[in-house]
Image (cartoon, rainbow, N blue to C red; front, side, top):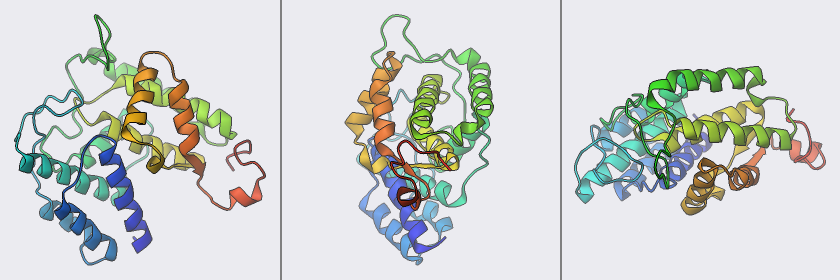
Length: 260
C-alpha cells in the first residue's frame, strides 16, 4: 500500500471505532502513525496493540462476551479492534455480498479480541428501545434471512449502474435490512459500515463516515429499526460521493447522474 492508502486505512479504522464509542489508546495512535509512514509493517500491529484482549463487560451493543473491566482492559480491546480494522482495510476480503462476507469482515476486524470473531449469534436479542416482543431478526432464522437479503442484492446487480437517488434509496433499504438482521452478538454496526462501504465503492460511490457523528448515526439507525428510514436515507445521501472524483467535473449535477 502507498502512504496515502495506509493513511486512509487508519482514518477509516479510527472513525469506524469511534462511531461505536471505541477509542484507541495513545500507544495505538503512535503505532498507527508508524504504520502510515511505513516504519511499522501491518503484520506487527496486533503484536504491538495487545492481541488477545477481551471486550470489557458492560460495554454498549448487547455483547455477550465477558472480560477485563479495567481501563487497561478497555484500552486493550479498543486497540485490538483498531489493529484488526486497519489490517482488514489493507488485506481486504472476498466480496460475496452475503452472510459469508459479513462473517469474513467480522472475523478479520475482531480477530485479536478473543471475542467470538465471525461467530453468528444463537440467542435472541432485543433491539434498540425494544419493548415487549420488539427484537432483532430471529436467531433461528438468520441463515434464511441473510440468504434472502443476499439474493435480493444479487438480483439488483449489487446496486451498480444506478442513478444517485435510486442508489441511495436501495442502499438505505439494504442497510436497514442488514441492521435488523443483526447476525453477531457484538460488532454488528462496525461490520455493516465496512460492508456498505465496500458495496458502495464497487457500485461507483464512496461513503465518507467522517461526516457522521455517533449521536447522529445512532439516532438514524434507531429510527430505521422502529420503521422510519428517513433519517438513515438522509445520512447516507449526505456522506456518499462519486468513487471516481473526475465524475464531479464530467457530470453536471452528479447527484442526478449515472453511477458510471
